[in-house]
Length: 351
Image 1 (cartoon, rainbow, N blue to C red):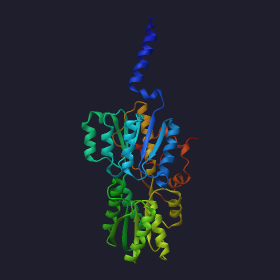
Image 2: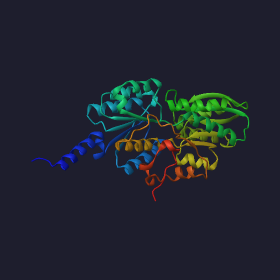
Image 3: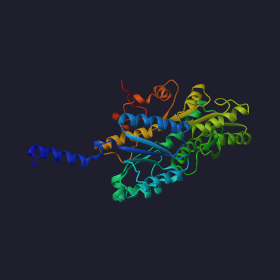
Image 4: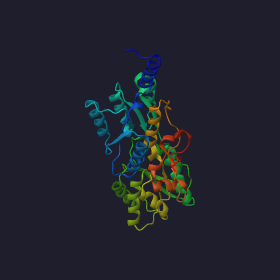
């Protein structure tokens, strides 16, 4: 039976749409290779925000937690490839410089890749520019300005202490993860350029509360007049605050503490003044990534890199502070989000 001219035209249009955007006709699958531990407060915030985005955008979404083991992330990608379990989209983090190996495994596979939180290196960007496969499948990169976050938290500590002179120490995350390196560099840059601050030492707490607690006990004995203690995440700040209190000192008064992240405990300590400076907002990265994937499914062209800031300084009583405190993410209109146009907390809520 021959198709009518009108029917034939409609079939051609349908086939063209399927060719241009095949995922628009089904539920696109997305896997986030989360480098953190499921019980860590920051990654819980990441997961909560991303799960709300996936639900709102009707995406088939799941998360694999690497448990702070970058080899585990690599092994999971190998498993997905070997068992033909690759999704339509992967969201990856360059934790401990594991991204090049993950991209090497994925080259030639029909899976779109979005990079979150830790920037690709100049060499990796060149790979994207010169490699036909990655020109098509490496979609975009969403990276917070960690230099800004490190600098601003250190500056806020100093200003909240009314620019009092004193000694400072930094407890960084690790030596290789770009977010850790850049965040620490920002704090170092501020402290080293203040005539009244003597930066004594930079050590590495590996994002761990108990380790930071033990390190802080040693640091406070080594530097009994320590005034400023900066940590790269909230869990390390919690450990430091515990050590400060055990030695009979008051965090926020005797020792000024600054850190990053938006856990309920960090927000509470910021309100109580035991944390004097707090930056956050980058937990939204995976949710923003899903919003970009939604746009890609609709056939929109994505920016190769999103340069909008993902961090804001969180001051009690402000709108941004209340948003991250209440965490009403299910009401966020993820389908209308344009990260390039504003800050990470500028989204609208459904009425």
